[in-house]
Every structure is written in structure tokens, then in C-alpha cells.
Image (tube, rainbow, N blue to C red; front, top):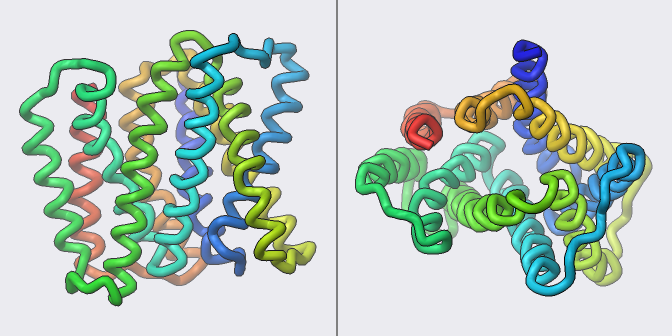
Length: 280
């Protein structure tokens, strides 16, 4: 059972890594890609919850506010993630986004009133050293710099997302939380579709469906299912493989080979994320 759970978590992380490539495959604005992703993900999760007969309704009051906030943050997180990949490369987007454990280690003590650990300060120095190595020149006009900044914004927003999710998951199923935040994000982003009026061909619709169903709903479900027999710390460590899987996919399917600076800087970032995961 443990081997099966390990496979489920690895396969989920592999699907998470694959998601970044859709930013290159789908010739649409990032906001429309995210709209398609959350639309298909919310439908898939809704069907799954109905089949498993889980109670979807939450309590009134503060919970609905937090779920609404999650939808807003999730929208920004994925928009900035795909924008990072669109203006630079899959490797840059995934590696700069992978800085989120560092942001989380600083934000958790502030938001959840936990004790701050000084060694996280040294780990964050390692991570941001990697980011400085990746950026060839600090100019906003430079596409790599833009990609890193969008990726950092994605990582920072994901930190807020994970902290609020952690608070809500003490009372609700993670799948129900995912269903609500994807559904709310769909409602929030739908006006962008009416305003931009994108031309969506059948091929693009198919890619959006794969992104939403497999790389979002299925991966999320597998990850949670796998954690039934795998410790949270082990799952977090496996999650640090996401950029590695994504970069391998980008090399094989897009021909995007990261340069030496990106590889060295990426090693710094992934190492720091790995250390934080071990300590947690």
C-alpha cells in the first residue's frame, strides 16, 4: 500500500510539473488559460465529490470569506505562473515559483502566530542567491528578469494559498476546498472571457481540458489520496521534484534546454526548498 501511495504522489507531482508546458502550447493570454484550467478542474472535482457523496456545503460566516479569498489568490497565482513561462521559459517559471517554501517559512509565523526559526533566514539566503544567479541582468525589459519576477509573484501568492488551505483543511476535506476555490476562480475570471473574446479552437479546448482534468483535478486527488499512507514531510520532499520533472518535459517536448546559469541557480533554489521540506 505504501508503494502505491508513493507512486500516486510521484505521479501527481509529475502532472504538476507537466502543467507548465501548457503555457507554451496554448496560444492564449494567461488569464484565459487559467480560466479554462479552473473551469474543467471544478467540473471534474464536482463530479468526483458527487460520486463519493461527500458533503460539499460549508458552514456560513468566515469560512465563505476565506474560500472566496482562496479563489482570488489561486487566480493570481496561476496567472502569474503562466505569465512567467510565457515571457521566459518553463525552467525559469518553475524554478522561480519553487521559492514558495521560503516565503511560507516567513509568512507562517506572522499569520499563524508560530515561532520563527532563525535557520530559515540562512536557507532563504541560499534560495535568493540562486535567483540572483539566474537573472543575467537586472533590467525590467529583460525577459528572463520578467519571468523571474512573475515566478516569484506566483510563489509568494502560493505561500498565502497554502497557509490558508492549511487552516481550512483542519475542518474540511482538501478536495472540497479545491472544488470551492476552483469554482470561485472560474466565476471571477469569466468576465475576462467576455472582454477578450478569444478564439478557442477544438485543439485548444482539448488542451485546456487536459490541463484542468489531469494536471489539476486528477493530480490534486492523487496527491491527497497518496498522503493517506505517506507522511506529510515525505510528500513535501517529493514535491520539490516538480521543477525537475517540468524541466525534463520541457527538454523532451519543447526542446527548451536550460543554460548553465539557470541550472546552477536552480540547484540553489531546489536545495533550499528541499531543506525546508525536511525541517517541516
